[in-house]
Image 1 (spheres, rainbow, N blue to C red):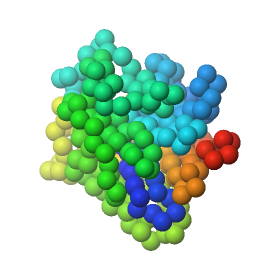
Image 2: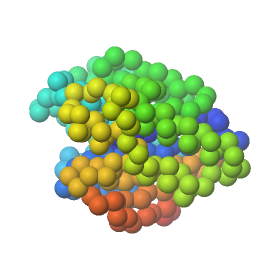
Image 3: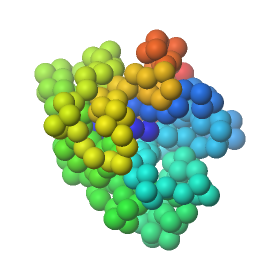
Length: 258
């Protein structure tokens, strides 16, 4: 996952809204979002190379999402897959600060968002710190929570404007925000250890590149009754739409359907 935007307790009908883009190599095998047969309470896409996921929701309405921290100098080849962390967070035992403090060293650098509208937290593996998100708008990309990168500021502002002017969020409007491929000017680019060319590519909310770019957008709306509405749209390396799926999880009735 490359970027997560969070609106927490800001909308009168939807206390938790998450808009997320997953950026990955286009050749990496992936399964679209679905209810997992081996973990029936889990709705998520699946990384078919390592077996984990980047974003998911469970039957209890808990949400977890992962972004890699862009720190090439800290990456090692023999680490566990970070996608396992989302599965752990959404499993029956859950995840907490103590577990993350003990086990983060087995993974390359990451941010892990986990919880629900009542308690939503983000763990940064570099600082080994868990932050409880406050009411308001937040962005998580490949640095620290709420860093002021151009695309983080751009997306947060656009989502805030949309939600403040609409009684009910418009999924298509949020998808349009998440497919904004505007690149930041060189003077505003962060320095994250990659080449200037790739800093430019990676500076947009939506990354369009034949080798590595935005593979999918997910929009999660959780309403006041606890019902989760999950939308996923997938793209290829040319930016073409490969499909769209809609899901609903209702923890109150223990029903879920596509």
